[in-house]
Amino acid sequence: MKFAFIYTCRLFYISMIMLIVLGSSEAFAQKNKNQLEADKKKLEEDIKFTNQLLTQTRKTRSTSLNELIILNNQIKKRESLINTLDNEVAYLDRQIELNNDSIRKLSKNLQNLKEEYARMIYYSFKHKNTYDRLMFIFSAEDFNQAYRRLKYFQQYSEYRKTQVKLIEQTQVELDLKVREYESQKADKKVIMDKLMAEYDVLTKEKQALNSTVVQLGNKEKDLKQNLRQKQKDAARLENAIKNIIAEEIRLAAERAKKEVSMKKADDMSLTPVEFELSTNFASNKGKLPWPSARGIISGTFGEHPHPILKHVKVKNNGIDILTTEGEHARAIFEGEVTRVMTVPNYNNVVIIRHGEYLTVYSNLTDVFVRRGDKVSTMQQIGKIYTDPADAKTELHFEIWKAKVIQNPSYWLTRKK
Image (cartoon, rainbow, N blue to C red; front, side):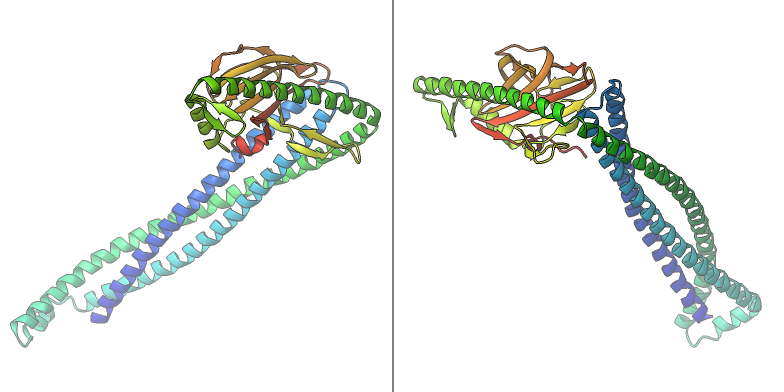
């Protein structure tokens, strides 16, 4: 009888530990699941957006570099989505295996609890005679031993009740695990079906990409001519920006001669207010908002190979952001509009000064600000131009630190 009592205690503690461990592992697994769901939702939104861009681009009859860029972006997003779905399947496989293991352990534990409870009932039935219990108590050597024997009977009765509760609790947990197991199997089937569908779409997108490359390859002469013109226009914009920066540095130097409070920041003298603004701008590196609410990077910073023309490199002083028709450009940080000008093939250009930093927003059709205006972070400054020839809505964006050009990708917040 004493052995049965000790064994029951051991089973009780083992069962409680199992339930606690299962609960903590479920909380951790739920966190991983939520992250995968969030990643999948974001990628699906990105793919939906690039589909809108493709639809807009394909309204024109001719195949363009624009379509190639969007398809490349679409394929990358689709591959990321497939990778996320693969991770979801792997996660569900792990959870299904863990649940299987939990079901086996809970079933075994439940069986042991029931068997032990049956032995307790059998023992109680055999010794249900009140006279035998009294004789056992009164046959004690002294009062203390008699008291302990009485408490033993009382505790044994309590543990029988505890055993019933533990059996009920374990049964509930087992039923829950079985339901989770069936639900996870159903979820896995849904994700596997979606995964196969995404693979099919990816195959078609890659075929479309190859076809676009071939068609653009047949337009080599036009592509070279367009590239030469674009390089000339880019040089005009760069020279205009450099002249504006030189003028700003000259004016700041003249003010510094008159104002003792001016502070020197690399190549440019700044007022205390401008110095603070410049410091705040620098401290937000990597956290600044995008210059458009939505978009994909269609042109990266620096020198890189042309996507079609062999042995040809293109240079970009900033980044190009492809977006939908009607989208607006917005200031990435508070500052003052230092110039609004027109540059061939870049349409309207707005330059905003943030202390010694300048941000450049090119290819605007309607401009909402004037020189000298104070702007706030994410304030709309103009509407991005849509080229009717290829339905392309693209913002060219640059960041300068006095005379030194910066890579905008290092300054803007990363899109997940």
